[in-house]
Length: 400
Image (cartoon, rainbow, N blue to C red; front, side, top):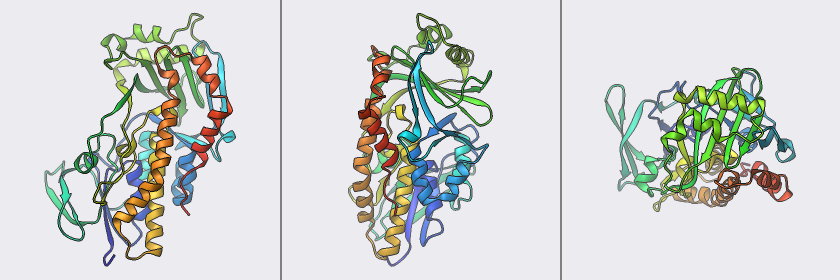
């Protein structure tokens, strides 16, 4: 290319931040548009980041990988334990049996803080008003609006727009399609509560029929809780299901709750006003547009069922692999084609995402109405499932 590659990143989430961090010191003109504030202290609750994310991040940004794993920022995710709400343990897996390194447990706001540190050319509190193709050799433009001042600004001569703006992506809807979600038939909600009386440590799940509790501790002596239960075919979450009485009975076994599960359900019932209710869903993957100057990454490309915790983790993979690919193109092909870059990325990521989405879907069997959690959890101790976990956690894209 005769001039530096000009990239517009829409969304300063996981993939967007990784790309800006990885390319801002190269001969690339890159800027990012983010609708939210820089210091998003209220972002989400907590999340577990998979071993595969840290493995690929170590190759691309070892400084960030180290920062994310420091004491006080995150806790290591070393094991995955699952059983029943009466306390019986059926599945207890040290992650190093299937991964090359641990994952982490972290608060969303802390993750954002680390990702956004030292970023340049990010326009926070800014929304995209218009974007599209022109007829020039650098074919894209953007019109954005500052949500604080109301001022508008135009960007021209853009070679590539990256949609990193989530499952309801404006980029994808403008240039590719409006994806139709596929629903699991399950309600999910999340909560952060104090870890009192110190009953929760590493990643654990408890099941009763098709209802599930998930919890792990994060720094700050807090516990992240994700609860789920099946809903009817109409996919409506009934108002009665948002009541303490319903939730108390939802997970309750005949033998009564274990101490840990009683703590979790009590915390849920006492903090219902803090809960955001959602439905588990995925969208069909889409990467680039027909003209080859648009690329979607993360949830905008392939939002998936959260059962294996791969949503943010695959955004790590997307962002890191894109950075590696651009670095490789710049090092070896000074006059490369943007559509060729987009197609190369898509060709590599398509099969990986197809596998991860399908594996996440298959692993969701115990979240369905009429499920048999004992049978389904025992199946997850078998080699066929463990081999897929090894592939998930170890077979990250090649960034050399």
